[in-house]
Amino acid sequence: MDVKQQIREIIKNHLEDKRGLYQFGDEDSLSTLQINSLIFMKIIIDLEDKYEIEFDFDKLDINSFRTINNLYDYIIQKIEEI
Image (cartoon, rainbow, N blue to C red):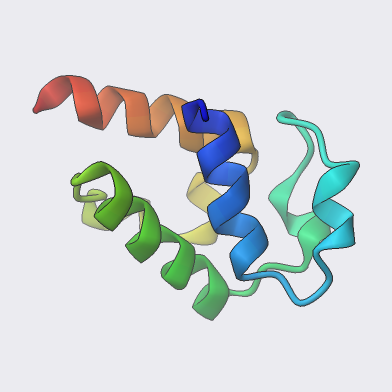
């Protein structure tokens, strides 16, 4: 499973309505999935654990990552820093 698919799975695990993610594109706004700040933090924690990275403090805001591609790019950047 590639990184984008793993990100999708982690997000899906935290959604109440998982059907919305099936038609969700990599450039669609995460806000359409009704992710609140608590769910967002749970997703970030799972991503940090999965990839053994740490998100910068200024990125711990749902507005920092509007799309799956934004999350993907950031995760790849953090992995490359290791």
